[in-house]
Image (cartoon, rainbow, N blue to C red; front, side, top):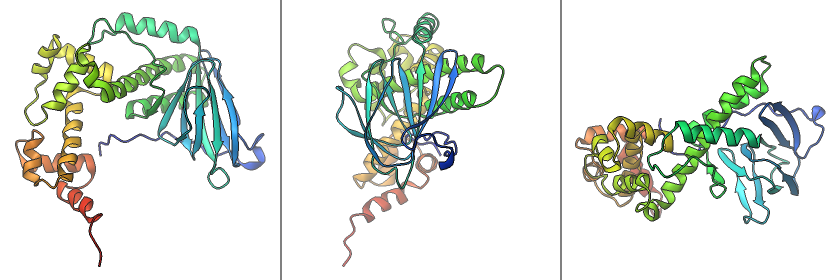
Length: 314
């Protein structure tokens, strides 16, 4: 089933109490050439725990719940599995563990070597062209709170596996995995930025313009050839560049957007036929089959479930 939800990461077994050195943020570290990978566990309710990182650090929740903030940057927010928080150099996480007595928390941190990040970004900007020629590959400190996309989760799991295994080629494999993680991170950030701000950016960004065009024309046929012309690139380049920047192919993005729009129309109590044609499906049966692939149930059952919530029981 294809979902747009946040994707969970692999969860290693919790450390036994007799092996814990600390019951609050017990830290197990695996050092690599260009990254320090750490696994944190908290088995006791705690408040106002501070973690400061000197280098750019990718953190991700595996189990449990944190209530946290980035000092001098954000208000408190809940941090759950399937989510990532990117911590800039010198920033401090201030963390509460409200449920750790009953449900221990487990998370990871990946602190990148600054030189590795700089060299990787230089390489990407030389080798990986973007749709907007004047834009560059960069890691945004503003897009710091993310839901894990499937590619980001897969890249993170791969790096976790490499860091925790005993392999003489670990550092070589880790460097390749780190580069992939950086790309997936930037793709996830770009996807979130475009999703949130495409209307503001459409006059200055070709990619945002294309996203806006897709969202406004879901009711009709959308060909890759036509979208490529709007972006002033060849069809093959458009397909490749779109996937580089967003992390999924343009036809998959269009399908996801059609299903999102279909769910909105079903909430308005439109008929299945109206929803199918309103989201660019020329065949109702094809729409039903595609919707079920994405959502795990038919459009009619989805709609029935929606309205059953508002049914008055006498």
